[in-house]
Image (cartoon, rainbow, N blue to C red; front, side, top):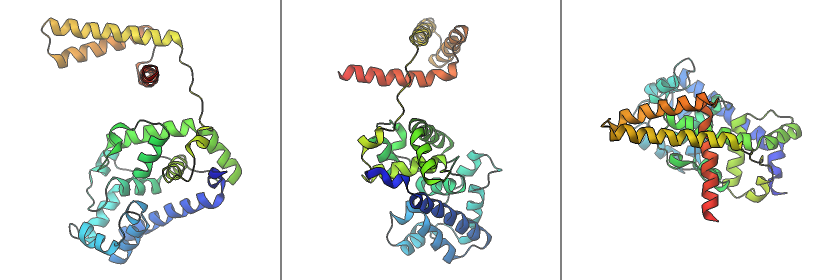
Length: 279
């Protein structure tokens, strides 16, 4: 059984140790910024270690060429300060630390809150059939890109919840939710797990209530009609769109449908339409 690796304690213990080393080294560097600890930190972060063979060159030419040890320590302190708004933390520019390295640091601090962004995520998610849109190429994390990253990881977690439960039961380790998704996607991206075998664990999609679909489509139709009507009357397109959106929300609420739940329904409809058109 190829995916047996996911049911071994050693696999998850190694990942837990990796997070601990990053967190510990980072905190030590913040307290006492020196080159030795910076080298240790860069060498511990997978996003950097597996990308650049000559870490000394990387530190000289990509990090310290644009900053100094003290400023780096200050920036890292802001990044991991959970008392600050996430938008403020992500504004900090840390030379040499892109979206992959930054997400890995946040993940190491809190693997139940922050998922990892890297090429393994992109490859693994796409192999499993998830649409990642703009996340295919992310240079720098923003609150919006991070929220979208969390949304996709949460969907993967939900789809493979039975697998995570089985892993926890067999290993006795309460694997953090985004450690589970990252570990699984990593193995898929590396072709160490067969997609077909893994998909046997995926939760079947819940059937949509036909009545709810009809209500949503009816509301959308009326919203589009309202938008066209307003534009034809001379309303500015932006204002017309805003008014039509409020109008559509009002219709949905009148029918007892929460507008916040519609996005998931529309995604399911989009997937269904895509499959129907491919037949």
